[in-house]
Image 1: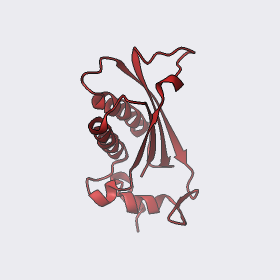
Image 2: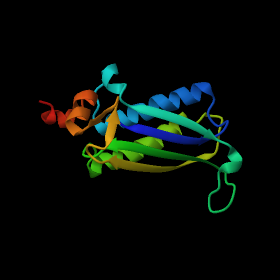
Image 3: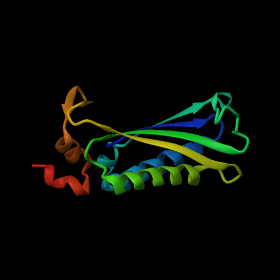
Length: 150
């Protein structure tokens, strides 16, 4: 049940590519978090894509957007969902999702910065209520955490 904020350079992904990007990011998160294919469970994965003006991207103090497509991903996940291996898969699959969604005509190299933040148990509010890990396991259907659901 992650909230995933993605910043991309403006005008890099057209409407179809943005939709493909959102689908690929959703699938990548679901695989890493072991969320089943049930649409009700997948609806717990929120992806927000924000375009940033190209003139706002600086890497090492230089505008590198003519050579690379820099993308920033910040993901918030309930603490306890991802172990070290799943976290590594999450980061790898986020990069792959962005790279695969890049329009074929764009010859630039994809570069990503992905940060995964664990939200401490009992500090994530959902619809006006603070949730703990069993609540998330129930809603998202995490395959590896169903033992927490009573």
